[in-house]
Amino acid sequence: MASVDRWKGNKWRARWRTPAGESRSQVFGRRIDAERHLTATEHAKMTGGYVDPGAGRLTFEAWVDRWTPTIVDLRATTLDRDLRIVRNHLVPRFGTTPLAKVTTSAVRAWVAEMNGTGDHAPATVRKAGQVMAKVMAAAVSDGLIARSPCDGVRLPAESRREMVFLDAGQVLELVDVIDEHHQTLVLSAAYLGLRWGELAGLRTERVDVLRRRVAVLEQLVEVSGALSFGPPKTAAGRRSVTVPACLVPYLEAQLLQRSSGGLVFPAPGGGPLRRSNFTRRVWTPATRRAGVDGLRFHDLRHTAVALAIGAGAHPKSIQERMGHSSVTVTLDRYGHLFPHLDERIADGLDAAWSAAVVSRSCHADTPAPVLAAVDAG
Image 1 (cartoon, helix red, strand yellow):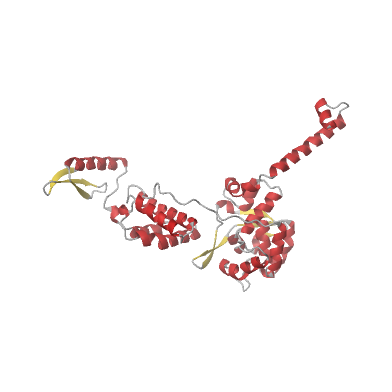
Image 2: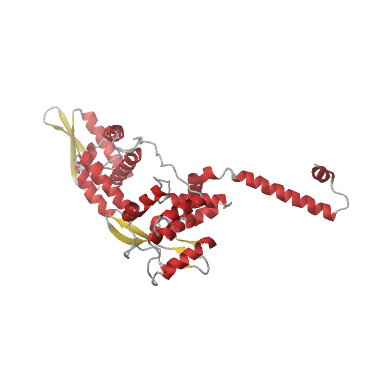
């Protein structure tokens, strides 16, 4: 039973039992404060909001060690990134602090310090704050603290690196200066829009040149230097992509050099391509020679979208081709490339109107006045 009794002279001790039946107590300077605490505690027990005050004594680092093995909802690459952030940014600051002592003001000060030193990009600070929020939200869910100290902490605005789009001529110029072994890889990125991992993990049996189809069913993933094959980035990433006729001869030649079941785009010495090696040895020198220094390989995926939009592709078709999780993602990223298509719609409506006028004139002795007026104009 919960009770309040005098403790050491002028102090008052509130005593109660946790939902698990364990005895707990807390000392107050006034009896009324002890009674209020018991009332709030009993209410929290009845409503499921009880938090054991002893649980918050667990240090941040100890909680991270307990929480990490329970993460099952992240891709390997995302988990690796988050744990590096925990190890490099969170534990050095909060590692020895009890969870209950991690305050909102402390988190806010940490974010401001990271953002103000100039040593970290805003995107890094933002991601570190998001991971911190994940860690503390899990502590709340586990009943270790009553609320997350990250609630209400503002993070730096997200600033995406500006996308670069090549035109078809620039793609060919880049292909001309890259080594022959990787030319089809570059063309496939620019005209199929596959991600690096999807291309590096593409197997020969997934490419059907007769039907001009590429099945994207897996990707190559690198985590802490270890390579493995896994599912595409999103569920929508499992897709079939139509190959433009111009790319077919290149893929045919590429497949003739590969054994069945092998990779379409292996490393020169065999085995999977490592992105870091490719970037350093092949990509960076080639982009400099082509006059597009600073171009990222992922910009070829942006290029594929731009070329598709220029060809009049519908946003929904682009979403499916790129493997975006929704058409909203497509429009959020590439919506600024669509406005000029409004003119094309108007031109198409003009053509439909003119065809209707001509057809009506051919099948009627006397055109309707409004059509005659338009035709005369």
